[in-house]
Image 1: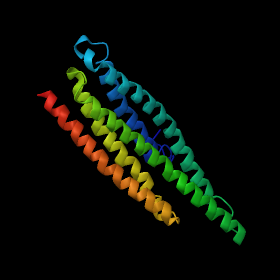
Image 2 (image 1 turned 90 degrees about the horizontal axis):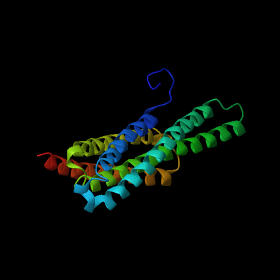
Image 3 (image 1 turned 60 degrees about the horizontal axis):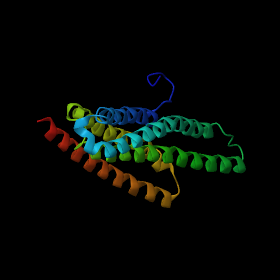
Image 4 (image 1 turned 60 degrees about the vertical axis):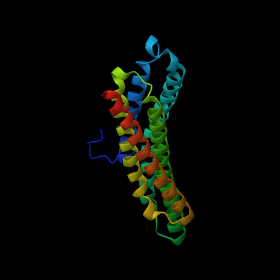
Length: 196
């Protein structure tokens, strides 16, 4: 579907779908840890991580659809009439609203990816060692998804006229990218150490 000549699902939706695979890897490591005698002492933490992962998967699935709806709404603004000054003003207002929506959803997907990295970082030192490489995969995939989905915000930002909104989005975006890198590096280092 993503390889077709249709513009949806585009980069934002695909990034959210890829993030689902990362979260699924975290959930799998949890499922391979919970119920094992050897990991009984960390079971409550791992169960909590698993419950969070399930919630994140549900949220990401919803956001895949939301991203496609936002894009289609934005494209619809181009088909609005622009013959009179009133029509032009209405079209511009609708376009600005649609642009913000089409930026808010990728930002929310990025927040979910960051949460996925947080739980993977918690799991890396305590998850079942026999499956710990999958926690490393989860961390790499979540960071990649976050960076990928933020490109969907980047493409809209130059067209948004609300400077305060843009400033807020750019600041949060930069913070998320830095935090995602930190969490991925931390989790990845733990995983590599446990693979020895």
